[in-house]
Image (cartoon, rainbow, N blue to C red; front, side, top):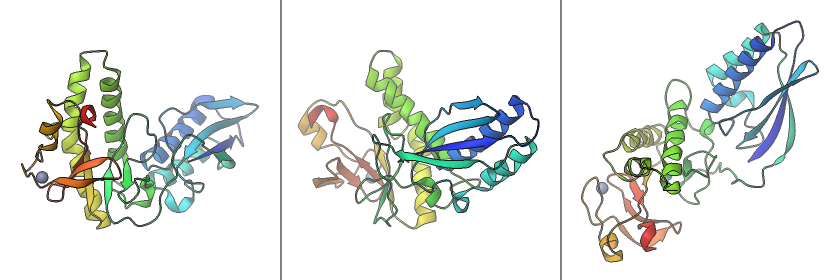
Length: 257
Ligand SMILES: [Zn+2]
């Protein structure tokens, strides 16, 4: 991933409130389309201009060709707030994050964790993140529903990894059962992505706990009950189970690796 700095210059008198609103709209639109990553953006005002540092999946993520209708509209609205089109200054490559994948995968998987800021749609051949704006818009012109699902999945993951509150158990249910809201929404999203891209797209179902390694190896697909989903060798060193019928992949319980 890449770090860039955007500079917004005022060309006439404006208020900080109007300028901030216009800039925040643009950032929200880009975030909903996967063009910028993360959730918090510090917009700094100094000497008549606003600056913000952003994390991008690719160097050219902010190219006009990737903009959603909302982002294009938000760019136009900068004018009303008396701001010029932002100028971009490339800062460098982020040393803590994965590279993005633009190859066509043979399969895809919806997979994230609380430490991953990148796209939750991964290339199934190498697990590299696929920038969301490179996929056809999933709903209403962008990928807001995927971003929202990812944010909630990560929040649950953080709660269950911290294991410090009663919320741990509710969070774990969301991540690891096919009856949960997060599963239902994520599984529908992966279906939508598969329909639009014509590439088989799977849902990653988290698994931890269990009574014994043998019980875990004998675990059946929680959606269709099939025992045939166990793989001889784990895919990508991670997915020990894969149900082609239900489009689910899962790991052997982290307690019995
Ligand atoms: Zn199944």
